[in-house]
Image (cartoon, rainbow, N blue to C red; front, side, top):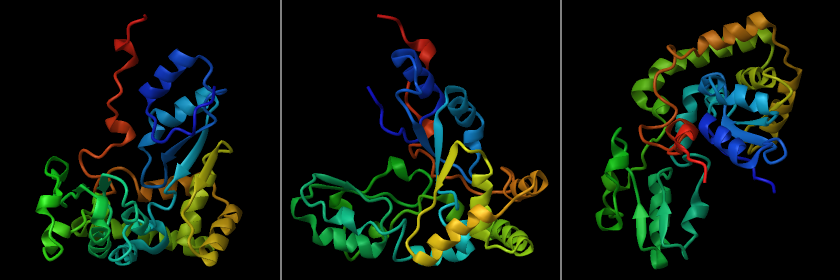
Length: 264
């Protein structure tokens, strides 16, 4: 038996799987989790657990969803291309529902044009409690931009937080200049230096970016430089959570604790 690469497993899920299946390394080859300079909460339990069990770590969003590549300018790209274009979702006209929390207004309009067999279209507002107040098809109007407004589900990129967080990028950029590399290479190098059991998977849409990502392998960091980088984006330096309140992440898992299970 083999389990696919788990995405966003938490400590309890790992422990539960081990209790049920026994030897995890033969079942789980790696776990995919968000890990970068400003998203390090996985270091509390997930990373140590993976290493204890001999499970590889696939780090997604190693560039902080593009923030350590372009800084605050990344938001400009998202105006018409939020979270790496999701037009393909709109073409799933045979499904009954589409979760489109990550679509721009333009993408939502296109989605609406494909609505022939879509009976449910769930949208979410940008407020912190938006998960409690989904918009349904009956609320949706192509002419009502307020209802079509895609939530910005990443609080760190909201205007009020981005102004604060841009200082983090500026500091990383300054250090990159000293090191003779780009800020994205520096951020990626930080992930590479976490260990041989870590494989970052940066999103790459251009050959130029691909070459820069490969170049990050040549960036060497001393323990002092690693600590300096981490200080730029320490937990108390970053404003805004990874996701909005209520979004499903490994910290919000509904898996019951292993201690609550009873043997059959």
